[in-house]
Length: 202
Image (cartoon, rainbow, N blue to C red):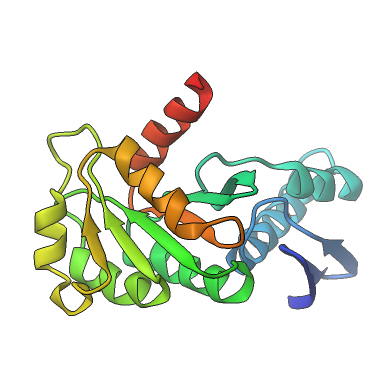
């Protein structure tokens, strides 16, 4: 599979499976979603050998219309607000690549995470990309406190601001990003869920 040209926030892919050629641009953001789509295409081709053949057009249409809340989900464009539930090192690594390829600066990060995650490693991957890191907390007994997170990422303390209340953290993030920057919330799907509930209630 070959990635094609990048245009705005979309990436075009070209894939050949046996004699079939597929050209697609996943609706889900991130180069890694092209790889996921390729796996789905190969699986669909395999299923077509034993069951009713799946139409190529419908396979591509599904890839280009799929939705996944909380995965590089843009909820506002001005100011630019994006949510990603990356909650492990693999997810944060994919998010890092997307940030470097596509997101505007300054990047302001609102971060909250479960206590049992690899917080130090996640911070080492993600925190260097942010101009300001706002540590918050979501409503779960399993959530790490902002102080716990900061203790595992001491090298970034000059960029870190502790704002436990999520609503206040988001407000500070928006002010810090300004009209041309980006506010990114990441670290847990619980965090993303709470943000989306607030957005829907407004």
